Image (cartoon, rainbow over all chains, first blue to last red; front, side):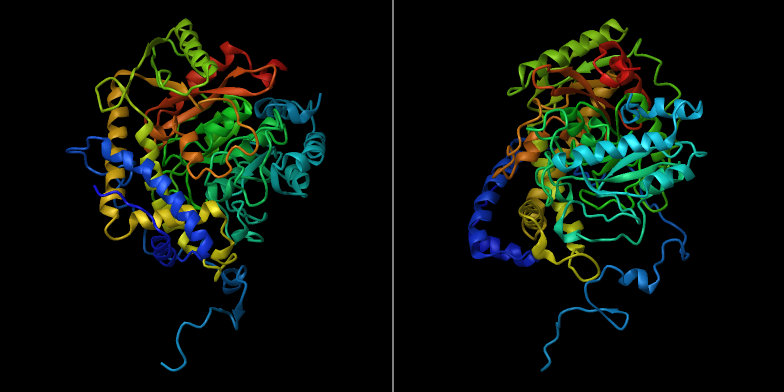
Length: 103
Length: 471
């Protein structure tokens, strides 16, 4: 298993994927930090996991569903839904422009 | 005596017999909070109307008693921040199931307690609002991430508290603060309305002055919840019915005392716990550690660090994607350093080309730990082990260490990753520093009653609990 070596370029890519803004100074620090962490994680490859199925949950529960009915105890009024938004407009959430006006 | 130093159980008895009044209890509680909270930084928010609310709940099972709640549980009437600047001034429009159940039982939430931001830590030092100090010795950390809740109990600022555990976050701060911390089986208590961290791991649970207090609170928390599809449909027993039954005939295994880097007092006090259980009628054996999966041996917890690192950060990167500052909270530039690191590493280990290598491998090793415990529980009823490798550490211990939490929680990660139940009970008190060590008792899935029985018997035999001494 090829060992990963984090560079500031790597960190830039991950920053975009994770939508976490980082400065170029932070990129260097984070790269060093990630290498340290991956060094610990790489120990996982020293364990024999032949025939071991990966688990994604520990409860053993499957297909827990509920009736397709409106639960009025859980629905928000529009005011409740907007109550913590920093920017609203006529009862809508306001977001930064994402579509170029020329498109 | 100051009424805030009562246990939850005693307060209930004395309220029922009318020997004490709620007004006097709340007066003592509020005096303690005013006097010590500025220095210890335990509460981020305190309900000024708590006493008035309490009087209205006198006829309910928990009679208006004050409980502190970790600030990752959404409460409609109190700001909820998860100790992060992203959620500063967040007023939840809905209530978590745990706090709703507590309120229905007549509890009053006295305040929201400090934690590691987003529960990413084992010290409460990575809170965006300053560290909490250990009430036993204020130069030291309380542990984390439920450090505020454990400290609130230790400081007699409440009669019980709620924490949450992903990998030691209830049991470890309970050990460092010298209180009882209970981690139920994953799925026993609803996560609905808890700020999500590790969805396959998070387990809300009670922290109390005594084992009995935890059992009382647990009764009101446990149960299937239609708002959390991972909660168990198994019926909930009355946890207060059998916890005095003792450990006669139980088979108990002592784990992890042969690992390196343990404080010598940790080894001594855990082995001494084994002796105590033997004296009480249990059959006790040492289980050796093994570096690979071996029948009747316990797998070295070293690999659990890697598993937890990958699984938790992966789940965190997904759960924290919702904080975009649009519908609630501040934008992602408000994340602290630790949160940024974890989100980014999680994103990396789940990304194309790496998920198959890291995430899948982690989930395989996780299964190895699960199988290891299932093998051991065929032979043993309970496993005892050190909760923490040593005493509480000094303020500043976490600086510049990206793996601090994981390494600190190594002894608890295997059982947390497996979803098992466990409890921390204080097992040693250092008279010079006033700090404590804790014994961890792990039980198989939904064996909360067995865990409580052993913890209670141990607590009453060892007799170092300061609250029980006063009664």
